[in-house]
Image 1 (cartoon, rainbow, N blue to C red):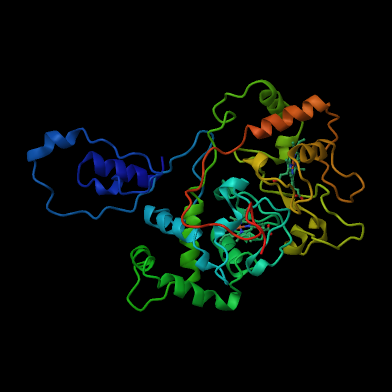
Image 2: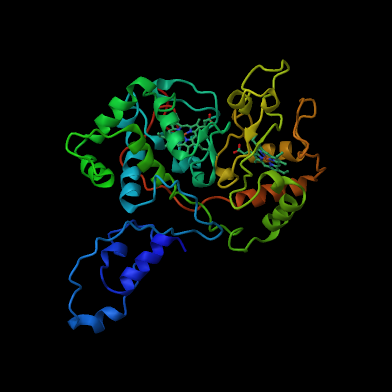
Length: 377
Ligand code: HEC
Ligand code: HEC
């Protein structure tokens, strides 16, 4: 049990205050503890000193998941989550007002964007496939190449870079502008204890958006509750016993490591998207990409970092065949498993059972030209 929850329970139990864990808190929190002693204590005088309720947070964890780690300089609070939720859906955060964070992480598209590679602000074509936003709290290094060390840094990258198109030079101005909007200013003031003239900074925006992202947890599937059956159960056994789970490991089906599995490796070494190699400057890391989660994977076609494969079955066939043996530096954990068609179908059935059941709560009009069903301009 995380410490804040303990404090919350204690406070409630002594009826000093119920606001610390009352219904005003984030909807994702556990329901307030019913205080059996409150009625009995009707006549007892209230304590002389009013203790300010400490900021509390308790995870409402779906079956199969543990509480994610949270950076010590950005503790979770209900206020941050509520504000981050609104900002995640606000197109005014982007350089040209065309995109919110949600634009490329949509419910109907597996909380990705259904495109091979993303289409950024200003309709700028980007080079990589959009990953799902579920369970990003569990990745220590964000992005396919892991260049985002933590969600806060990742958010700053997406915001100033091609996704949202604000530009590094304009980020301070944009944060201040968003932070001064009448619907957001009071919340920023409260959360960060701002003075009247204080400008909201990019990192403060990144902190609240990251707090919201940490609540996007996907578990509770038949796999998590131990209720897999038939093809999905057989698929899980292949997945577990034949090596898929060495890289797609743990609750979130990712070891957080970088592997060369031979996707989009050109004939000439050093050309194309070299992935992790560009971050570490070590040629041994060329063409390595972070093992993606497989949560919700049946809803996030097309596949791989370049979106080069259209169907889940094709992606599974590729992985189970041991990858492209002609590729130098191919990870030797990838083996030709010599599976039958029926076994491939079982693997697909298992992956389908990892579909996320939840939805992000949408705020406002989130149609974007060129993404999903909305035709390009
Ligand atoms: C134009 C589409 C687009 C928009 C808008 C967008 N994203 Fe993304 N997102 C992507 C793509 C593409 C990637 C992968 C990029 C890469 O790996 O180089 C990504 C990756 C991520 C990741 C990392 C996922 C992982 O598995 O490592 C997170 C977290 C994320 N985005 C959050 C956000 C936030 C927060 C915003 C708003 C500030 C945002 N996104 C806006 C397309 C988008
Ligand atoms: C050596 C580590 C490793 C092993 C073993 C492995 N994978 Fe992967 N898997 C990866 C990496 C890395 C990627 C991303 C590759 C890329 O996009 O360049 C990936 C991508 C995938 C994808 C596409 C996900 C997406 O969102 O685009 C699926 C599906 C998948 N793997 C399933 C499997 C299955 C099934 C097995 C077992 C037959 C398996 N993998 C074995 C590392 C591994």
